[in-house]
Length: 286
Ligand code: PRT
Ligand code: ZN
Image (tube, rainbow, N blue to C red; front, top):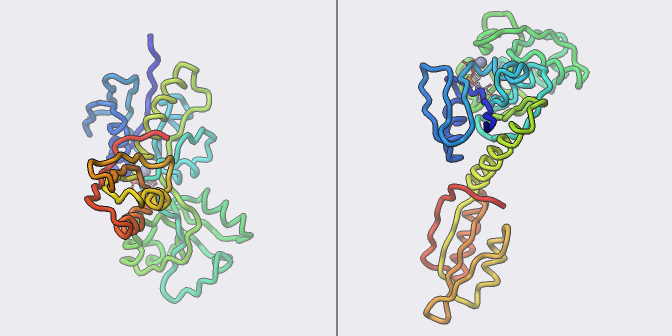
């Protein structure tokens, strides 16, 4: 019988939807309902376990699940030693030191002897130790941003994405000390059969992630500008160039990195490109 692998995914929260979207985009079909704890995929040997994110690393360590999707912050905070098989690059955030207005922050040394509220005492302590700073972590499991106001801490170290929560609570983001995003973790002692299933899942994930950062462009170009256009596009291989009925023109198609897209677009227009079509890529391999 074919081996199946199980994945622990956050039941409801910042990671849930994107974790499930990623797996669906891998062409894996399943039914997830917020009231159920388990699900099984159709046509791919993957079973789901929907749990709180805090529990995911331990479940993977205990073999309750073979793999899991969790924030790097949650994983690092456990101190467990599992395999980080992919950085999935969503749910990005940073752990930042934030201080009340009027706190003269001059780097981590300003925290010497201070009380710092955080939900990530292990990560914070490691960073403070590396920087030779001795401070007292005040461990709280939520509402870290109110601790200064109520007088239990002098500063905080909390996750930030837009910075709105800090501002709303009268705090200033003083320094980012750690960066996080969703990662896929796996048990180190997974069987060979399961490893093969994991490899096939990772191959699909890589294709989806690669496509996410690319656009596909198709345009007509004066034939004598082909070399220049290829240089502008750069990328993996030379673009595909097809002659048009009008001998002076060619049709060019290629994938372009999304972050370079507008710069490439402008340059191609200057070279005389016409009828530029831009498409999202669903999946892609190197
Ligand atoms: O119920 P369960 O335990 O499963 O979920 P949870 O409430 O513990 O976690 P959840 O869903 O809030 O976050 C899951 C993961 O998302 C975290 O472990 C991070 O890896 C990641 N992530 C990304 C964030 C944020 N962005 C984030 N902004 N986690 C929390 N926040 C909080 C932050 O703690 C602060 O309270 O959002 C607030 C700040 O947001 P901004 O936008 O105002 O800066
Ligand atoms: Zn949690």
